[in-house]
Image (tube, rainbow, N blue to C red):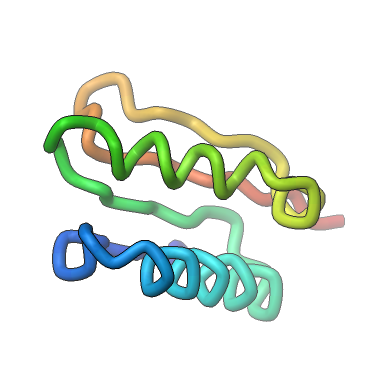
Length: 84
């Protein structure tokens, strides 16, 4: 099962972005999803940087295994989880 978060609609509302990111990470932990796809889009790259900074926070980083930047589509990120 893969969860997907498209941020095109809230690209310019910082608090809504953080809330949406937190909700999708919490949902992935709750249902033990192996993958979350986050789509910031291909704009100037500021939203993608914001997402990466959010994912580097200590409390968030403890929840997932790794982040992968899509090599074919730079407007997309994958957050991988490892469950035992």
